[in-house]
Structure formats: structure tokens, C-alpha cells
Image (cartoon, rainbow, N blue to C red):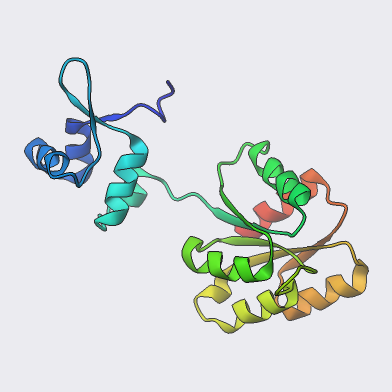
Length: 189
């Protein structure tokens, strides 16, 4: 078990939450905080369960305990391309939080809840295309801050048009692993 997976003790939860151990035990007994008992009878809390707890009860300690990872939403209707791009980030050594969508409609829904820092966006997709996604995002005030890395297999004219629609940069397919990583990192600075 790695250090990242090691569960918290009630004392650690108390310290991180700035409360007493008794308060933590009350959360556990009331069912607010998921925990398990060790063979010795001590409570332990899995890291994901603690993260769920602080999100649900709006604790202001999230960034202190769980450093903020950059979020990337990959949007493409070709599953192989999505997996290729996810692999680019997993093998790149930087710890990103990654979500995926298979069309522009699904992307717009996920953007609202996931709040990505970077959108990697295919241009030609079913339902809502990349152009329309860009236009809608750039109209929104708070959502307009999302950086957009577009991808296309349809040449330079389309690459220029998507930048005009609001993308920050566009890459040509077939994609190169290192090119995806470098441009994503640059846009996330």
C-alpha cells in the first residue's frame, strides 16, 4: 500500500479538519463520515471517503489536504483517439484529473460539473460540433476561461477557423503523443 492510499487515523482527520478526535468519532457514528475498524478496534478513514466528506459538507480544507490537480476534458467521437490522448497524459508523468466525452453535447454537460482547466476538442463530431462548443464557451463569462486545444484531421483551413471560433490552438491529426503533452502543458500554465 502506497502512502497515497494509506487510510487516515481519527487523529489525522481531527488535525486536518481542525476539530477534536471526539468530533471525528461523532461524524463516524452518525454516518456522515465513512470509516472502518482495524482488528485492534481503531477507526480508519479511506482517503476517497474523506475527500467525499469534505466536499459534501463544504469544508474549506480541500486544497490544503488534496492539492488541486489540473483538470482536462477530452472530447472526441473516436474512442481510440480518446484512449490515445488519455495515455499521453498518464505516461507523461504529470498527475492530471481527466474526464472524457464523446460529442459536443456531452462535453457541454460535463463542463458544468467537472469545470476543466483545459478542453481537448475534436472539431467534427455528432450532435454539437467543436465550433459550436467553442462559441458557447467563449460567450459564457466564467466558462470563457477554459483553455481549448482543438484537434482535426481536416487541414489548415479548419484549423484557422476553429481558432477564430475561440480555440486557443489546434493540432492536426494524426496526433503525436509528445505534441499533445507539450501543447496541453503550455496552455495550462
